[in-house]
Length: 176
Length: 199
Image (cartoon, rainbow over all chains, first blue to last red; front, side, top):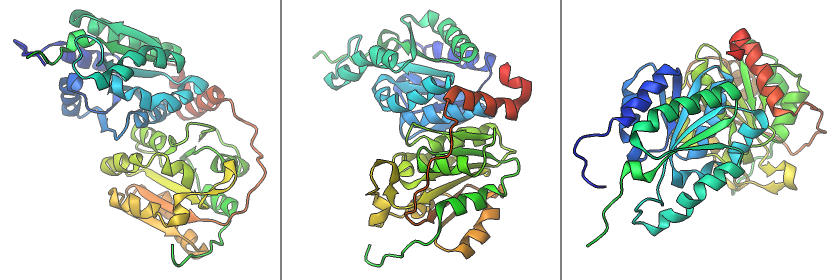
């Protein structure tokens, strides 16, 4: 990851949107791009923040949270999208809302070839699984994308994935 | 397994015995026979029937239990379904919701797909795994006496519970007709949340 002059503010802005739209349960598999947001959520005692062993657990958990009246969000990296596919069928059949915030790998300046398959596969795979896919390419537009994605998923009961471009998160400089 | 205990308990009798005490508890089923058995015991708007999504039941129970901490949540699923989502035991065990009980109807078979043995038939101990994953209350149930003592405990919000009930190989006809997922979800929320379900 390239050294940043100061920490980015977009994770704090996502946290603020979560509070604004009343996100009560946050499920995640850790990702470097989501570190600050995960820490902010953990520090908020009014949020139930759950570390998962695999991303599909979060899909099932947030179906349960919606059944019980809690809004939730799933934080994951593009490499974890494939783990979700079968359980996304629940969202489609039952018309559950699902807010997925996906930090992307395998695209902008990626150094690790093993990230390409799932990174490049993420948009079509999600679309084929019945998820509405939206994308934020610039840090300053992430918060409004999260807000819009939350409105879309919770008001229309359709799963929505917001992809945060690898360009926003940065990449490891692999040049010698 | 070198010393095999032949299971004598009947799956539907056990499920009926549990659901007879459901009160205002919220029920989530796993797919397959557990879904059909719970439906046959009597439909209820606060039963969520999973007809698919194998491996999802326990985690759905966690999300629901966290959202509704004052209501007891009972997940009723099968051994094959539980084995597909074993990581959930670690996730739930570390969360430790007091109001969640997971009941595995363990016939040691994949009943829907041709009665192939599951790993529980080869000695894998699901209740032991739950205990190792920090569930404070666990048991493997083999007898009617154990059933009688455990049913009230499933409804006590005294810490996450996990029981594997060893049942015989009897299969029953599928009686449940209700299978539209959106309908099952919407009526569950309306029964639980009232008008807030439409917010």
